[in-house]
Every structure is written in C-alpha cells, then in structure tokens.
Image (cartoon, rainbow, N blue to C red; front, side, top):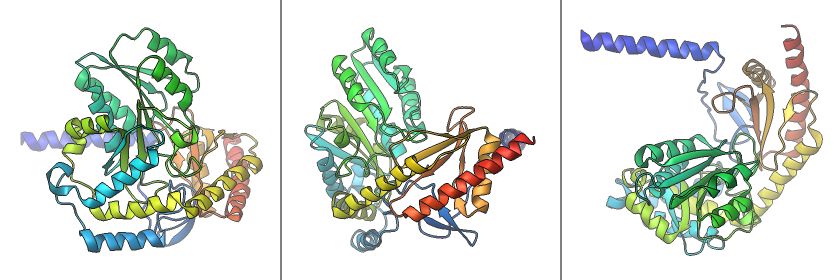
Length: 415
C-alpha cells in the first residue's frame, strides 16, 4: 500500500506541475515528421516549409551521405557493442577523429580529436574532466550568461564534483570578465562560451576572450555547435574565421547540425584529449556510436571542405543578406545576426505561440521559443536557413511574416 500511495502522490505532483506549465503557456509538445530532414517537412500528411532546422548546409538528406551510411552499415554492422575503451572503438572512429583534428590543426598546435555520440555528452565530458585537473576548490569557471544548457549543466556538475567557483559574464561586454580574472588566484581557470549563441545567432568575441585567457593563464573552451561547417572559408568553424591559433583552446563541434548526421567532437592539444580519455566519465561509460555513423561523417567532412561545401555556404550567406536587407518589421524586433540563426523577438509567450500557429496555418514550420530556453519576456520565433532554401522560398516567407505580424498586433490590441 505504501509504495502505491507514494507513486500516486508522485503522479499528482507531476500532473500539477504540467498543468502549471500549460497555464503559463510554457508546455512543450512533440511533433513527429513523416519525411527526411529537409526544407519541406511532412507532418500529419501536410507539407510544411521548414525554417526551423539546424541542417544549415542541407546535408541531412544528401544522397552521398545516404549511400555512405548504407556502405558503413554493410562494412561495420549497425552497432559498436561496447564503450570506446572496451571494444567499441572502430577504425571508422579513428579515421574520423584524424579528419576532425586536421580541420583544426592550423588553430590548435598538436591537435587531437575525440568523437562523442552527442554534443551534450561532449560538453559534459570536457568541462567535468578539465575541472578535475586541479585540486578541490582550486578551479574557477567563467561562463557566458547565454551559454547552451549542455554547457550550463556541465559547469553545474563540475562545480558539484570539484567545488569549483563559477562566475557569469556578458559576452557582449567582457570588461566585467577581465575584472573578475584580475583578482583570481586559482591555479586553474576555464572560460566557457558558445561560439555562435543558439538563440540569438551572434558570435562570441573569440579573439578578445583568447587575449584574456592568455593574459590570465586560463583555458578557453568554445562550443562551436552552430559554427562548425558554416563559418570560415573551408567551413572549419569560428577558429578558422577568426584566424585563431592557441594551445589553450578547447574546441567543441557538433556533427548533427551543418554536418548533417549525428554526434560531436572535442578537439584540443593532445595532452588534454588524453586526459579526457582517462577521466571523462561520460566518454568512458558510454557505448560508442555505431561505426557506420562515423563512416558517414567522414564523407560529410569531405563535402564540407570541398567545392560543394563552399557553394552551399555561398548560398547560405546570400539568404542571410536577403533577410537582413529585405525583412523589416513594424513592431517585432529583428536581432542582428550574421549567421543562419535569425531570431524575431515578440516578447510574450502568447504572441509567440499565436505567430507560430498562424505560420503553421500558412504552411510554415517555425516553432515559438519560450522560457526557460530564452529569458523571460523574450519569447521569439527562431528562424533558421538552409542552403537548400531558395531565394524565392525566403522572399515568400518575408511576405507571410509581414502579414502575420499585423494579425498578431491587431489581435493583441483588441485584448
């Protein structure tokens, strides 16, 4: 009876909390697609124009990657069978890691890469393992306020495990970070930032942050999830774009966004990577990603750094310029961004949800993004572009958005 009663109470608590989320217009819902990831999505039999994916180069449904996945499955099977340190580390993983390291070798001396099944795991591993380099209470972590949840969770876990001190800084004004570092006597300091901030689309001031890291002997960890594949002439990411070279860089890239497949990697000076292998618990205790995925990613990297990747980045940048030049709102706030992420701030949850609903009725898939993903009062539409979008697709979206803005404004004025 006791166990049953406790379970019933837990269910009641869950139901109450979910109802509370719904009353605040914060409840999230899953939506199943019936088609491959592309600029058009089939949802419950309806075709929607998708401007919400992180498939920035349009590679997720690329025929050469589909062929590579089939080839990898035939060659390596469909599972790895164990963690990397038991028997799950395949030659396919080894080759991919060497390719990934070669992408950053101009920017990180003696670069080595380590492959992970997700960006979340890569961030958890890197932050928690690096924080353990120093004795208890001897590590300081400085985190950009708008960092991704995976970075935040990695920092929280590292702080709990090592009693590291944690300070937040505004990436748009790093003077405050400089002031904090000046008085820090800890032997290990780690500055943590997104490369491209996922909800605003702006870039971290990498050069300025590196100068501070060098001045105060800190590591600089950059999660370039939304920059890898699209930033830089060769698509190698924010370090290439900024012409950065430093052995204190810890670079993290995602392979399920612009690369079009799945997974992530950490690239750093080889000694740091060896430390992650020895002490990175999420890496040590996770079953390795299927080798067929690694095999597919090797083909993706070839495309990214070749002529086709260059052409796709050119198309993506053309769309960004059109948006910047031609999308003008009467009241909604367009956030300045030089990336494929182009947010539109509406403010209230109700307005963002209404705009998303009207977009859906007009044949578009652009979800409303609400707290806690973004700060309170900054609910938005997070519009993203793919190299597979045409200029005509974008201009039609601009026309639709202008009309929908007026509809939302009119409804709000009558309430």
